[in-house]
Amino acid sequence: MTNKQWSNGIQTVDEKRAIKRQAILRVAARAFNQQGFTQTTLTNIAEQLNVTKPSLYYYVANKDDILTGILEEAITQLRSVINHVTTVEASGLEKLRDFFFRYSEVVTDDFGACLVLMRINAPAARFRDHYNALSYEVLQAAEQFINDGINDGSITPCDPKYTASALLGTMNETVYWHVVEDRESPKDTAVRFFTIFETGLRQ
Amino acid sequence: MTNKQWSNGIQTVDEKRAIKRQAILRVAARAFNQQGFTQTTLTNIAEQLNVTKPSLYYYVANKDDILTGILEEAITQLRSVINHVTTVEASGLEKLRDFFFRYSEVVTDDFGACLVLMRINAPAARFRDHYNALSYEVLQAAEQFINDGINDGSITPCDPKYTASALLGTMNETVYWHVVEDRESPKDTAVRFFTIFETGLRQ
DNA sequence: CCTACCGATCGGTAGG
DNA sequence: CCTACCGATCGGTAGG
Image (tube, rainbow over all chains, first blue to last red; front, top):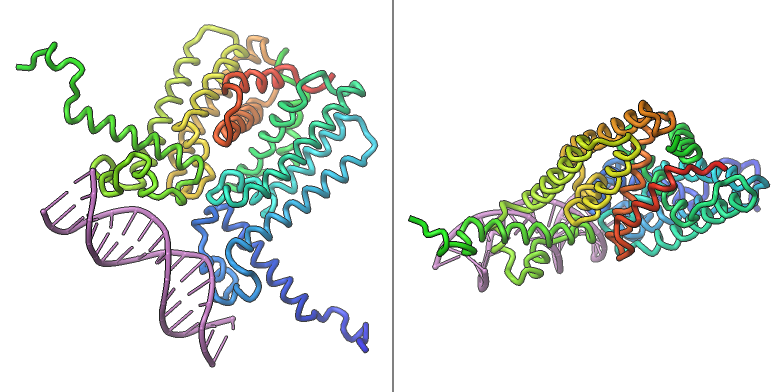
């Protein structure tokens, strides 16, 4: 019989494994984002965790498993953003703005950035399905908010597909910014970018 | 004494070398864009040209030299676009639009795409200087056109730096589109994207 | 322009 | 969790 108080805060073997696996994914994601998947060696990742390469294989199956784990984590986070914003009661423009902000925060995190960069990074072909499936959901969601906005009068009539892509392109731009160097918070950047889209260029 | 008519259309040894080198760069650029620099082997490039790997070394110094050659070609093209648009007599908005269109065409070509993708592709760190220097020039040019537009009243007051980055982010989006699959012409895509920026979202 | 080859790197495993 | 090691790949060169 397990004593609740006794076992409180004490981790089971499985919990310890999960935590260490998560630590590997985090370190790996950061390395992949900075050097690329192929350039990053398992020895390199192991060193940052103060262990040797073979030790990693107790927590992950292989190098591909690491990347898959990262991508799945990011996809879960992004799906949750889509679901949240979809259920909000607000105008289309407000939902689009909210989505833009939340998306930009997820996607500037190590895991989210890895997903976005993966679409073009070295091993993309092998992992493109992960990106493509999600990319479609994200575009669909953005399109939906734009259509909502056109219908409720908060957004000017436009091509929802291209508008969604232009917004995502700009969002992804913030990913590169924040991977390469420290800047103001992703949210602040997102606010500035979204304002440009809202206002438009023409006098 | 060289007979002009006689030598017309007949290539010198140097010309033949330059043409073959160019062919290598072109095939390599396409491969780098699709598979990434590290994933692309010299054997792979050689096979597409129906020669063996060692033959390439008659035309290029090494793998890095190939990429450097591609990047320099792209940089030359982009500088020429900047110079051209800078000297045009037109409103700021018109210059920005013209720049957007021309940039999008250069950057969806094999060489131009390679430059844009290189900012995050595997060997980025080693070649980042090439990208950064040009990226700065491109941003500066876009900012200049935006400032011109604000001053001549063709563009609504905005933050030129962020606006330039948002535009470039969207431009780069077209690169991914056209690298991954065939679509309508880059120009047509650019027209649609720019319209969104001109109009703005808010009703 | 090719055949043959070297040196180094790296993912992954054996075995404890 | 580590030491030791294998197999495969790949950039680059020798030498013709």
